[in-house]
Length: 221
Image (cartoon, rainbow, N blue to C red; front, side, top):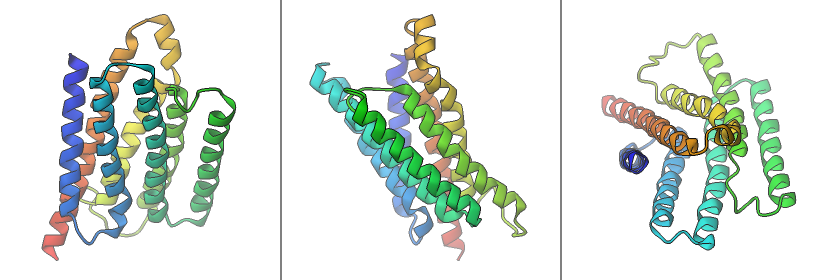
């Protein structure tokens, strides 16, 4: 019951963020995040539908395939957003290498491990989170080293990056230790899903704040 309630709260937060993002115009730099929010709405609604349907193998496979496709879109859009914000040549080159490694890794897993594309493999999402946190640190490092005067409390790019860093940092140990925790304490997956939904909702609250700051900045122009 608690999982269902938190899931619905998270979904409401995502949809609300999407609606607010639509009101934020003339912000090409935030377009990747807008798309990410849109795909998050589609993904979460799809998962809700599969939860309601009878849990057959086909329905489960659809849910897992949707999750795996979404993870690729998630990584690509967040990476593109951060790549377009980062200035340092070495950082940008490192991000290109990391992106290639990520895509190659997933292709190898899905190609050589039977039924992996139709399965939920938590360590893959831990690996994704680890790679996403790296450019987040790149961007924050550049901001802190910059001589530009930036109000970090109202800077949409900084807020989005911090929210992204928070969520993926905190989800890494959960996904990487998922199987071990489940082996040691069967049923703990429900607690892990609950906590992940809470942190996912917080991620979109941070995005909501970023878009609200952007809308406010547009009104002041």
